[in-house]
Image 1 (cartoon, rainbow, N blue to C red):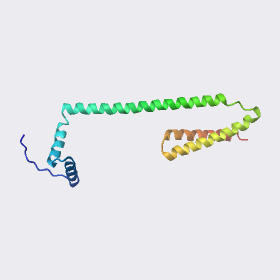
Image 2 (cartoon, one colour; image 1 turned 90 degrees about the vertical axis):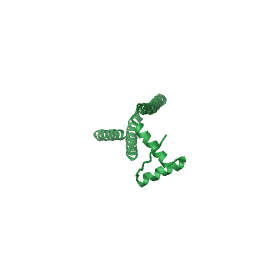
Image 3 (cartoon, helix red, strand yellow; image 1 turned 180 degrees about the horizontal axis):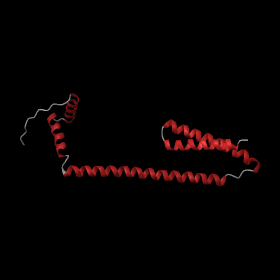
Image 4 (cartoon, one colour; image 1 turned 60 degrees about the vertical axis):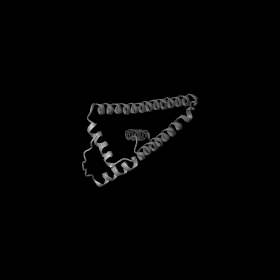
Length: 151
């Protein structure tokens, strides 16, 4: 195979990158540049397109597997939470009638503090913007109901 000499002009950073790559692979700089040119020219070929499609398919399969895992974990978390609430409600005895009103007021106050703490945490971490907005609305509605009930 005969080779034709050709001069290339590269930016200094790019030239250094090519030199480092050539040194690390124990190859000439012209061999590195020739490989890149071959890859660029061949990128429009049918084989290159098939290889790119196969790569895209593998990447999509990996993403799909991760999403499936997240959905499974979310389903497991939901089931665990529902089981906890079910067991908690089943094993807590009902309140006496004379304690029910004070317990209701205490529960409402604790719930309001919980909603405030959760909304603050979501706002601080920057995640769950939609959930944070809904929690703020719940807290406002809850505060409005308390104001209506106050004598």
